[in-house]
Image (cartoon, rainbow over all chains, first blue to last red; front, side):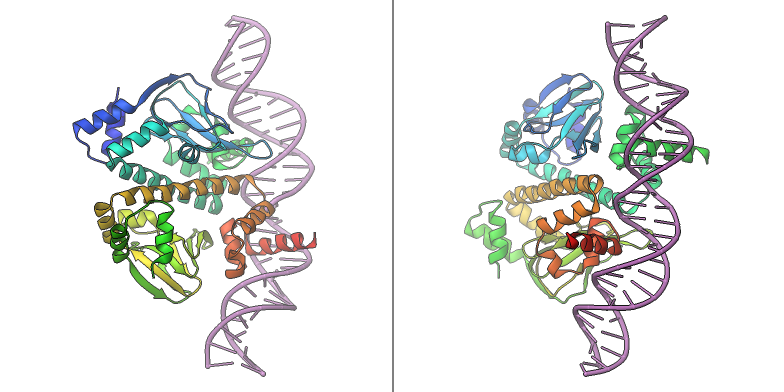
Length: 192
Length: 192
DNA sequence: CAAAAACATTGAACTAGGACAAGAAATGAA
DNA sequence: TTCATTTCTTGTCCTAGTTCAATGTTTTTG
């Protein structure tokens, strides 16, 4: 049940058996079907979810009604709206399963319990957020500085398994352009 | 000397006098003139700098030679290349003073010492990075989903003091468009 | 397995913003 | 206080990406 997540945390902190046991005891196991919302705009995010199985997408809706995908998360990733989760304030985003999923959840309460009992997890979460931040800085830079073709090529190189798992227009909404244009980019690349 | 930074950390954690003293003892005071690089691409970032006085900008240079500004930092903000600092690997970015500055610096060593001696600082740094991440998520969304006019209006509302302190073309490079176009946006807005 | 729904492709007309060039204004250094 | 440098503005032409609409394809569901 906990192999994947324990392997994950081991990348960040070395814990003894008791600590790992305690950590595992706090996790809530959840199975959920595809095309289901874990969070919708306006709700308060009650979870940080580790994905054991499946694929999840987080996105915003802009004032013209268009979706902007923030993240695709697959096995061994975490999903949450960090701001909403930590400050327990209404979220601006949607979190939706794209496939049937198997998740392990922390709640604000269990996370807090964990951090109080085993403070070394503070460091792990800090490092996780730091990586995330670094990645997002790169992505912002790319979004501003590169062309559609470059963005697409970088995406399929960086996340080679995602295109096989999610609809193409979701990828367009991640890269920041229209589905039609992504289609044109792809045919252009295919011709070469 | 330490009023500002101690007020800053008090927002995040309550420390007793001894802890604060220890924290302060680790900080290195630095005065540095304007138009000076604290970090250049390829170098390893040796600091996290708290700004007591002055204004600093961090930016990337893309493969066409154009600058993309990641952050303007002023009094009571921190600047660093987090990825380079923590992993002690070469940076992709430039950090440059725009005004004469007075800084308080942590190095990888002093930060580590602090975290070992006073682990509650782990939490503070985690929360700092989390806020940063949240803000960057919003900014990415905005970059993708809004027009130049909207971006500019949001910028001057969010950071009203920055336009008086930095050259306009830096703001353009933050917002992700050309200086000429920002100028046109501004004249258009002025006419209304 | 058929019908419906969701998704992808292609083309034509359009637009937000870019690139370039030239001049005006501000800042700064001696 | 002048000359040089940097910054800002304005105009013209150009292009990457959008929008809309039509058609084809794949997936889902009853």
